[in-house]
Image (tube, rainbow over all chains, first blue to last red; front, top):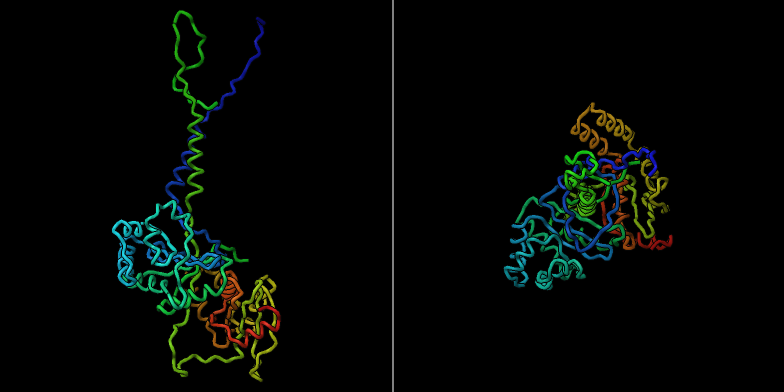
Amino acid sequence: MPKVKIPRKSTSVDMTAMTDVAFLLLTFFMLATKFKPDEPVTVDTPSSISEIKLPESNVILLTIDKDGRVFFGVDGQQTKEELIKRMSANYKVNFTPQQIKEFSLMSTFGTPIAQLPALLDMKSEDRLRATQAGVPCDSLNNELADWVWQTRLINNNVRVAVKGDRETNYPVIKRVIATLQEKKVNRFNFITSMEKPE
Amino acid sequence: MSEIDSGGGGKHKGDKKRGKKMSTRVDFTPMVDLGFLLITFFMLTTSMNKPQTMEINMPVKEDLPPEEITKVKASQAVTLLLAKDNKVVYYFINPITGDPETPQITNFSKGGVRQMLLKENKSRNPFVDSIAIYRQQLNIGQINEATYRSNANRIKGFNEGLIVVIKAADKSKYINLIDILDEMLICNIGRYAIVDITDVELEMLKGVNLD
């Protein structure tokens, strides 16, 4: 064995600091963010310079995707429970207590009320994958108007927010705005993404 | 690689007389991996910012008797027709004859509808530049939000200012509507309305091949 040993410096790096940073970042994300609500459809909103923020609660969210399907969502479990009971009475569609519970936990939906029990029976993963036709809002069968109207009767200070896709055709938007005006909602918000003023 | 030394001490040369000592070094590499996996999970499934909104006020849809409908001078108004392919057709009303003038075609680029709106607004409302000054004062903290708002609204409500009538054709998209409402905010136009397009205007669009 050679008597001269090559002096070797230790190559192990102390990773304690790295784990600390990793857990700090993790804690930040856990505390400062909220889970994105499961939406049946993703919408690409246009941008605007407006900086008004959407209020966190008491918001009716009407999501319109690029094919013109309208999805309705409102926050508040009690509101939703009361809402579905009233709509069930109005449209003579029966819901089991299990379905009512599912509805109060669901975020947004987009089907005519006749198909709603079937949708509620599905498990939530299947629900996201099921193609929903959209809440009808044409003049013959304006269910959207009733959903909005009943929600406003239950909770007076809901604000209506419309979240449309960039590529949505104007006639659907016009129909939704006309529906809102019929039900005396004249102030509402359009949800947009952030744009820097040039 | 990554390890935490929990008192195992330096590497002592195994002394045969002591018997085997188990090394107390724990390798923490998997913990770091876990940490980063969880961070990635949270980054992707959560969202931090509240979505921005634009406020819209639509007129009440009642049938008002003709006397109560606010009369505006036709020459004060410019009508913007949102057509397909992100194009905007606009026309003014001739103050003398009361007929629509030739429609002009423009788009949403910087030199398009914004330039026209800024020019027209400035020529009719000499005070419009002071809104920018108020905004600067607000930014440096000289005035508060309420003062800025009341001043801005006062200037925007100037009687002889530009009035914009927005009519969207069926072939336009939602993004066109939002962009034009955005332009109203950028150009500080106080009075605008979204109304239904008329057949005359549809003919106008047909005339410029934008129906």
